[in-house]
Length: 276
View 1 (cartoon, helix red, strand yellow):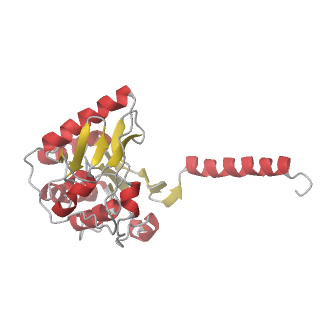
View 2 (view 1 turned 45 degrees about the vertical axis):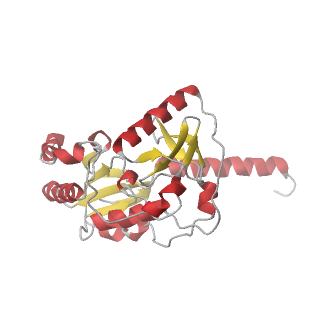
View 3 (view 1 turned 90 degrees about the vertical axis):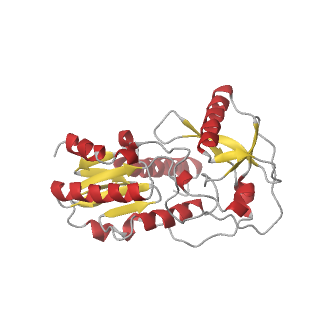
């Protein structure tokens, strides 16, 4: 089955390939709570390199336009820092919420492990990996907790109305949300915002993707086609290679372990030659 078949399927769901809109309706009831047990935390703004400062400003302007962020007068303040996106030269603004997280009451919603559903992959032969656009920002923060999300920047103080990276319990909140989105879809496996679709044949796989796209559209979620992988016989997922033969660790991960063991053993020999 050629890739054009999947492109044709995507054309039937134009809403899921469009970026979020300022007037986009929230189509679910999951909310992120920031329950704290101490007094407000504050921190001074950190300096950023000029290029990263420009990226941060542009991203904040975009989030303000979307209604995901707004100016604030809160007595909370967490500093901003920039982290590189995975396998990319781009940067993502992230709040340093360590002080806030230290006083946040921890949730207990579990995040799955690939070993939890390997048995469900038995008999599957074709796979797709779905990449969601700004998935965390689809979760509103509880209105009474919005002021706690304030971040301090050289260009002002802002608070988030949507869930941000770095917040305590954010992964668990999103896992609860995505579990709701994918409920009763046994052919879809999700680890936070990483979504794997596994099927036994190309024809079945197309049907599974159509069901998934319908569900994403119902919940107002968007995907990024350029970062999705469709209809392959083996795929990388959560640090493993998934194929008809089962799962196996990625070779680069295994090589790192062997190199570490070799380097460590050489160091021990040089440091304690008589003992070894």
